[in-house]
Length: 321
Image (cartoon, rainbow, N blue to C red; front, side):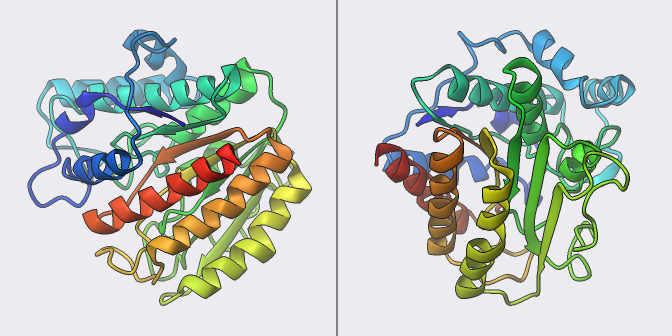
């Protein structure tokens, strides 16, 4: 399994008490060390030049927004758009590198021989809208990876499964009119958690090819291991069977763990491992094993490390099997 990471991620400084802080990378590093996975950077990929990354980012994000983000970092603004999107002088470069790593991961699974790749970067991305930052997110990394697979690698259908505890509003909105992306999200019920989107009736834009290609599965606070597994067995995997994607992308947030300070689900590290095993089996059946996994949330560092380790172990086990 390939892992893409750039050191600049640690220099996105959100402040001492911000949940999405650089210390999360230490938790990621521990998981990678225990699995003997060594990250590689963008050098030698199509995305070593940040100008190329920015040009691609502007396929999905408005040019004016990208420029506004860049200027905010250059001029020392403390946040972008909303106070939870804290920034520092290096935040634009870090977000660009995070987008580049997601794009490099998408390229890697298409060019082989590896069929699975992880972008182990911050800031996360699934809340980022086309024209604004939200929820610690600036560029929508998973959406950019999907766009790369569809437009430049010629795939006809990709699926994104988002198991972050928060609904990926940005990802949903970027693809809600399109029929070539199936977006499935399991998340804590939007009546009880940020960002307040992701109700079951949100199924894609009516009257467009995307109608029916969004599947939201809100989970009540307290949802634990057993309910999570049943949800994936009966709804998520069945939806993937019907759609038959050519690549599977995972928005991998680990904040549904019962230890996470920002939410109220009661998943365990084993929950992430088991549901990932199901997803990896679906990828083996329909995608030739092609999986791109992109780090999203997870704000208890122990839970993040243990959840990520189980997640990657399940992918590696299925790939080797």
